[in-house]
Image (cartoon, rainbow, N blue to C red; front, side):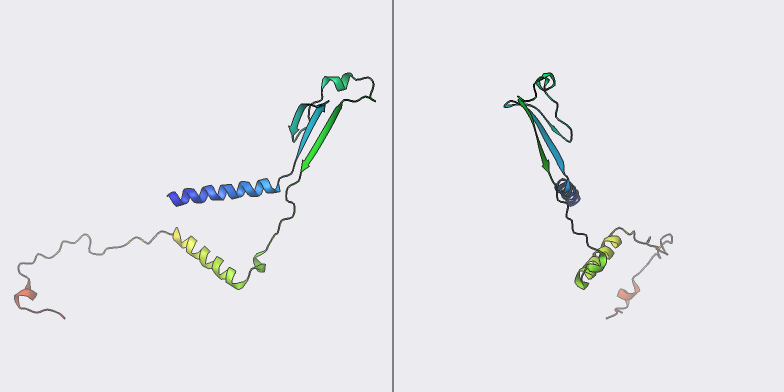
Length: 133
């Protein structure tokens, strides 16, 4: 049972790792002078009040900084035909062993289950010293 939990945790972590390595996102920051007003991920940062009230656009004190974090976009896709013979043999034997792992066994039939056994009065083989060798 412990092995199954460890396997599930490892599979989940690998899935999250692949997802995060291929994810791209944008971080946007809005500064008013040297003070950070707002930062946002996946959205636009809120602007400060000074920027909307500013009449003279020559003396702009506000600035926006946008940083794009690109994920991995080159992934290698392989088909089943690209595998070598050794890898195919391993995959086929693993798949066969894994599927047979969960098959139920046939119900064992005991033909003489409901019959009473013979009551022995004397053990004839011991009585006559006849033993099979």
